[in-house]
Length: 480
Ligand code: NAD
Image (tube, rainbow, N blue to C red; front, side):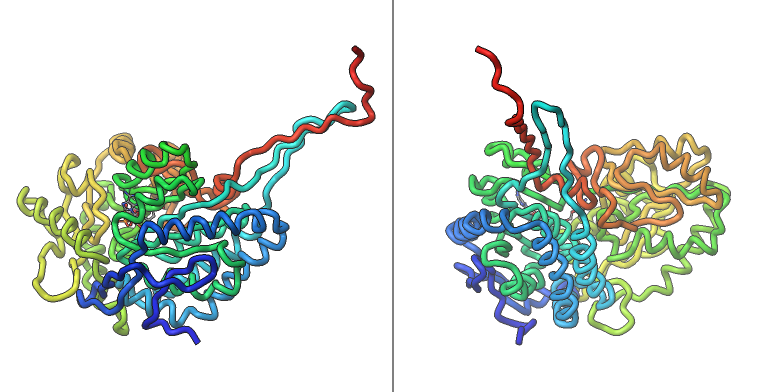
């Protein structure tokens, strides 16, 4: 019987491994430590990489259909344990129980849906002389590095395709949210062959050790753009393949023909779900001047009805900021907005009470060059921006180094689509946001990332293309 409250061990070569040391894990709603996580030494990372390398040949040789079955089967393991896993996730991450359940079951869904993908083989030549085929072979050992906002779902964005393609893994969750991932490693110990999925946790050195490790062939990283640059530079030393899913500053453009009462709630959640800590949250909302005032009023009225608190309490809709560093960053952006004299329609106040709580905050039309518009806030602080002319809104939305997602809202779907097609982002939504599918490519344009997750595009990122030419025996040897 798995305990979800204690005994947090790494998984290396299918075995439970205690850390060389431990570090405390805090509940962000109370700031109280409630568990100790293993702090891997460099030698322990070496052991995890060695276990993954040892398991690679047999896993790569396992028929694809068998790997599909085992990856799809992870969904069942997660579903059977969702109760314990989601409660633990709420404690370490802060999100309400319902959202934590969604994070775990999202991982399950990803495994199940991704396992329906097939690796293509294309025939490049088929003549009397030879047959040539391009197929896709696994890379070897994948180092997967995950962030703290959706620890389970975002880990399985990597684990599912990496395993399907025939790679073995070393998975590292964020040190702010290590526990649920450690338990998942434990639960999968008998499900996958030993060494196929290793889970390690540790402090700030562990990520750089992975990106520079000569035994790791690819890094799949989700996190901030700033860290993504370091990952890419470090991976360059050994020419590791990289997939980088990085930060965003998604714009929503709201056209004047929307039904304000109908869209206000959806727009609210586009910005504030998970307390704004979503890479594809709406982080700048451009609203046409004709509806600016009524939409502003509707957003503020709805915000007042939303309950923020400890995610473990009944009725909580928004939890705290996940960790102290991010809390300090969001408070800094609020302080900057206040110092510049921007008007808060709601929120903006801070409190000394325990927990990294930042109230829902909406800022009334700050200047386009303000920090809250230009930077990724990753918290519950939304700049509401007024526009007059559509061309101007499109160019303001595109004037960013980020290009993760963007949305357009209108009663006229075709008009919205025409605007959407001019936006520079990896995912465009019309009259919705944040929907992603395991069968749709997901990735950032510009400095929001490199490569894709999901779909065949994402699966192929865990492979090398290999072209094989077979000279046919029937052909007579060349003369001379
Ligand atoms: P982060 O960059 O601080 O950390 C992400 C992970 O990288 C953690 O596991 C961390 O321990 C590790 N890490 C830190 N420094 C490292 C280094 N030098 N080398 C290797 N690994 C290192 O990001 P975060 O604060 O955990 O997450 C928030 C950020 O992630 C936001 O910018 C958000 O937009 C982005 N994000 C992007 C996506 C996406 O799919 N594009 C999804 C979720 C979050």
